[in-house]
Length: 281
Image (tube, rainbow, N blue to C red; front, side, top):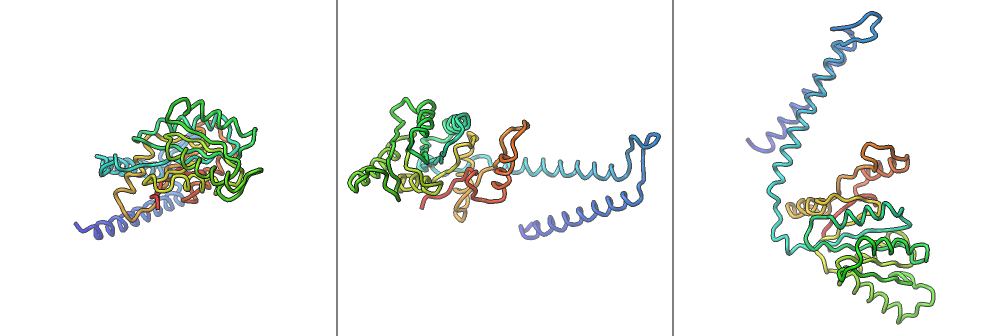
């Protein structure tokens, strides 16, 4: 059956089903018919509740079937010559909560993708920002694969006491550390989120095929990189992919600002709270 005809039939069928459910709910609400009820109606079950329950059951069944179809469609994983695909994960950090930062870096360490490069850029090079570099050493440091550099400047603003020669030397040093290290941390002069991302992208240059970005309070799923890369590889018209973002807590209480952050993430495809991956240009 042609794809367009199948799509049209699904649209028509879904619309008719929605109208039938709406009509049934409205009729049940108007009639108020009850199947079972106790004295003074402390407990009752009527036509209205039956239709709502049936609707929920059918929705759950369709959701299960669609989820199973999507999982089957995703296997086997089709990545042409994945060894030739290089990805860099860029983490933007600014006065982050130490526990959140540790969780973020540990999750980055567990990502199941070969030769993933991790670049953390700290927006601030003052003494009070140094704890983030200490956490980087704690989680990702201690090996020849890790490198760091505390820069007095950034790519758009020279730091105190910086000369033109030392500024150029610092730029070269940032590039060398980022490109030569599997795990790297750059602390630079405060310049805001865009300046942090600019440093990561500028230092990477054309050394990787794809760039993945996230904030330093993001906990990453081990399969996030390879799953998002699969979408990019399957469709050349896709230039960027966003992850499935969920608020912190997993059933525990979260603060209002965390809920608002999650809502903003869902509403904006390229929110800074989201984990995204895109083609390197």
